[in-house]
Length: 356
Image (cartoon, rainbow, N blue to C red; front, side, top):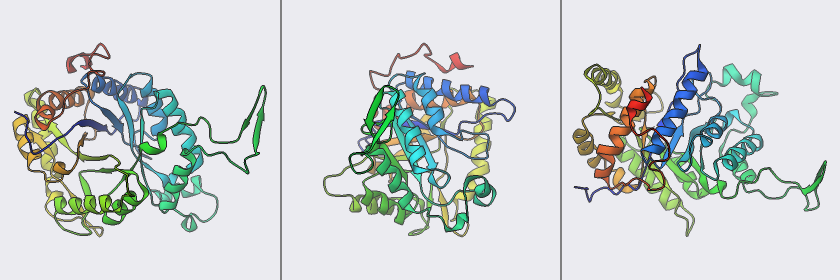
């Protein structure tokens, strides 16, 4: 029976896009096949993490452009692009190109702040003293302005190329992409700013303990600040992410691997971590019935309609497909979700065994 406490109408998953150092093509191919599997299962969206200096997806637009050619209707997302590494204009061009290739299915998760590895990469990325650069929310606002597709110059600026004369603006113009930009909110301040700016909001399995030492209370207050700051008439999307690993159809060895993974991460959920008081929610690993019970007790999820599985790092493709299959078939229907009729049957893979 579907619970009346939750009403999840959209499910997605977020993959880290792992690959071996000596075989990036093989690992990226596995992630593309995972997107295909997600679409076949009826998932509404599939997301990839953008990661730098790691064996992961360093360019979300490039990966999502490839994914757009392997899928038909599933939404494709990045979570999150750190704008400290990026030129807001060049990134807008790449995102617009990927959105055009996808037929308007792109979702763009972004965050502000200096590059994570600034001391290492700054000499390779920036001219001058990077510490004087503006890495604030203004960088996000410049990206948004570029995605608006407004004409450049005084209205009389034209670009002349062989066989063509056109008014100057970012090309290609991806209509509607500006409204599919998400901010990775992890504090009261960032959530309030995202609301005031009218962005979609993604919240995940870690957050700042700036207003509470309790994960769920802190995230609820961030959601409240976000919604209170929204411009009149605006109701952007909000998605919550949780690490969810059902193991109903996993074999004994794989179940033990999942339990060991959860145990290795349990200690950090007991108290705020580090100087920034980072809070972590517990990983939801167990049978579908156990996971459903814990999801129903998650008071943040009663405030959202979109739920995203945050898949663990360094798992194999067959394990990822088993996880998203069990979730779509055994957990999500009990949360109010139904698969999109347009998505089901879009590719020849109808079970995780096809990916073994």
